[in-house]
Length: 330
Ligand code: G3H
Ligand code: 13P
Ligand code: ZN
Image (cartoon, rainbow, N blue to C red; front, side, top):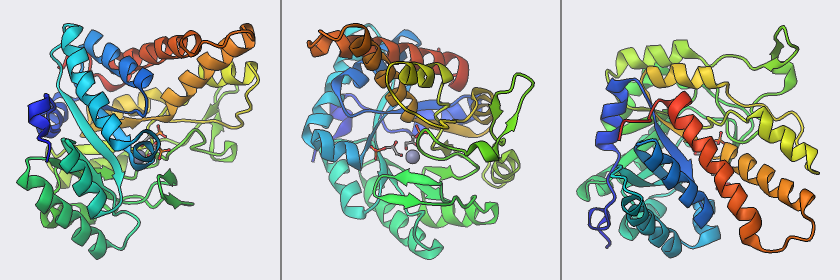
């Protein structure tokens, strides 16, 4: 059993409590390789932001759990080397079984998500409570989920979303003991969150997606006072990155994300953790495609992964300062 505290990680309890009362959200950025992790740490140290490093079970399979754990340990040391004393959590994203959560806890993770949202209500409670019971013995925080997001959640995929039912949240939190709760209010995973048919057009002719269901968030807030709420599927799908990908040989159709102002509004309310993965994938892909297009003779991975890392870093800096409001909160 590796104790996360001994390797300099923290759980998410204090960082989310501060965020919920402070009107901002802590970034939860997914990673599965070294360049992504370097970009996250550089951006969060420069903006003095707390950060949650997220590993999905797909990432774990791709990169190997031992390597990821040592990368995260390296990230803690790297942050110090850069002169930043920022809180860093290592979190399992969309854990779907007790055994997976247990294995991550034993590997040195400081926080886990048990996503029982695809089960029935009672079964979700039973599974989530079992993970909480084990995790809390080791002072590891647990995120649960109520309501279903459309799109792919690792091995779990849903065609349609089901919004969180506010009348269930108090019972769920009380009976499971979770430290934070992911809810469904209109976000979804991936780069195609809405169809053009679901959007309206503004005066410039740009597509505007339907607003998030803030009435549900506010109803939940009334029932769970100062309790950390988590928003998954929160990439904004920047037009700049999509255009760059398509300009340099890509083919992304109807890529539409969550507008930044909507996320800012959610962060000012009780949303205290915002999950972003797809935007990082888009920024990396755009930068790499540009190098490949402009320098077809280039074959040194550092010459395209380097610019990809720089672009990612700028994306995260922008988010911490202008979207999540986490800059300066470390
Ligand atoms: O919520 C899903 C995350 O974006 C992780 O995606 O399962 O492809 O690693 P992944
Ligand atoms: P995006 O696909 O919108 O980046 O969401 C990521 C996420 O929710 C990870 O859990
Ligand atoms: Zn998610």
